[in-house]
Image 1 (cartoon, helix red, strand yellow):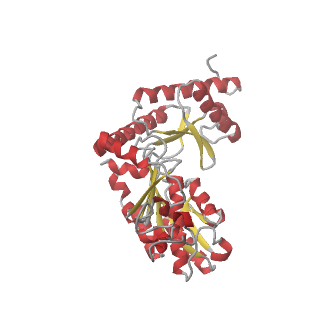
Image 2 (cartoon, one colour):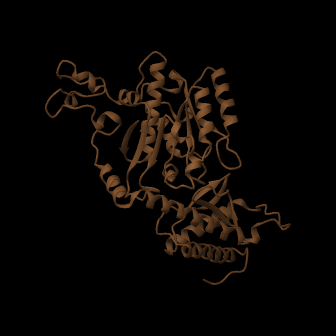
Image 3 (cartoon, helix red, strand yellow):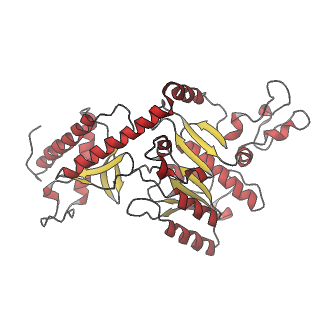
Length: 383
């Protein structure tokens, strides 16, 4: 298995999908490189679950397919890919004359931390002859946790896997990694320097300029070079900090830190669930908790919880997050869950304490009441 250390999982996921595109092009009778194929010419389409990281769509743009080549598959109530829907979409696209070539599974979705059924997805990929790429930006490293590892079953069957060391592995930003199962496909997608070694050196190749031509001796000897495995010509020594990090802490301590964050997420979810003014918007899967503040003045009078003014509620929660950030209390983000704006808490910090989460909940409720009072929705404290 090949490995490349690069910018981050977003960039490295693009590397993986470029390899998949290249291999599909070769299999259809012609060598196709990034930028040489499009949806109109190659009719290649890929699939990912709704809520998949935006880097997937961006990567298809970068390699020349266009973002409309990505088919978004509906998700289940647990926010995982609906594999039955996936297979129906693939079959329908083939009937329409398109060429499905890629499916992207997720190990820890960016919005809610959900994990696709990777084993079932691998079966579907094999049945439909699709390249299976797994976006494991932060979730893949949870394999170090004894508790999470069984839920990642099937990840080892992927044709490619991208993840970030700078997320749940706590390595300094930035450092991503991509693993490509087929090393020959990886190399041929980005380089033909090896051809320049024939006859003792000389010119470059179609994608390898003359000044990077290889040789059997001297500084240009040895192959492959890092430049042969991706988009970067100049590369920093990112692997050094990963090696030293693992050497210092070991996988056992890193796995324990991941498991500790799971306990933090459970604690936060439990606190949210008992607060009358807070509503959790997704089931807890890993370490992400999404919820929002819902004052009584914006809800249906029958207690049904139906939002009367959705836009105003979204704006209120957005302002709560800004207040938390500007006051230095916490640094949450926002996202949208089934169209509703949510406060998103992603717990991947080994310094997080339970009392930090208690403070967060208390402040969300206090600030929410204050802002609601200003709008005339509910009584509130002055500060």
